Length: 435
Image (cartoon, rainbow, N blue to C red; front, side):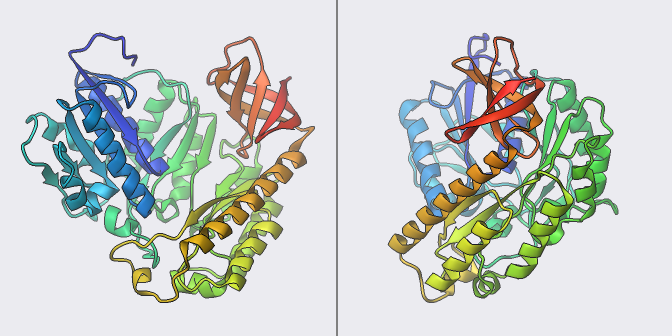
């Protein structure tokens, strides 16, 4: 909905963090539009500002507070609501910011408009209920604005794994699943509105379990929906992946893309044990190599956490070695951040910030090298690219294996899938020619 559409009220949302937050913000935007708000970009004048927060690191907390202050400074008469994981875990810090009207944790954040309706508050209203453990449904707008890009589809929330560094089980609660019929109804709605690729999102989606159904049943059911061109699995824990997914990824007639993002976190068994991860270095490598062998051209990404307490130079070299020598083609690199209430907070042998910065830079360099090698391996191939947007005459989109491709065309390729021959590398993208 454009900002020029006449409305009596305007609202903007800024979303930090994961795809799950993005999925929930998209539902909130639909609710705002249905309630008569005109949606404007964050940073423009608005009557209501919602900051959807993340708390995975100290930096995420700080960025959340900065964005809240920024909105209040630019819109001193507006209603300011803060929602999400940092609202759940750091309500007191947020309440200390002058001008905040509402702080809503994860349990009630999709109902934020129910609280906004009462008007501004002299003191922040804090709604931070304990996360329920029951499976759930989500209300969504079946008829809303047209869509022109891939959409995140929330299928699960919460986590039971309790890794020693992770605050998310405290912020989002224990693992629970979205009712299959409810998520399929939303999927059909998204496709009817124009979405061609659905990205399955959650905290720990591989643990999806609803009335005997698993994530395999979710994928199978989505594959039967007319109009779905691609199904993509977002981040998924290595111990929760059923090998039957490989068969579908390797089948060109199946809509599941040949792509996995599997968090490694560390390449050292010592650190993996301290992190309370549920696999060894070799088990992770065996699985990644199996996926690479079973699915031609698969793209496999990962996360690596740098500077965990006790991480020695040898432990770090183990992480570099896994990234360098495995079929992984990129890694998101994160510096360890102390989180209140986590087991790692009490661990000794902290790694200095300077050392963590040096290690992070080296891993990112290796990641960039692996991405280029993956791109070079695909040059000369003709693949399907789902285009998203254009800049300077070049359309940009992704292959099924998650290679970003740009191609020149005078046609409108927004949300259009085309066959493209990959011809060369330009920066961090691959230049293609439409076939």
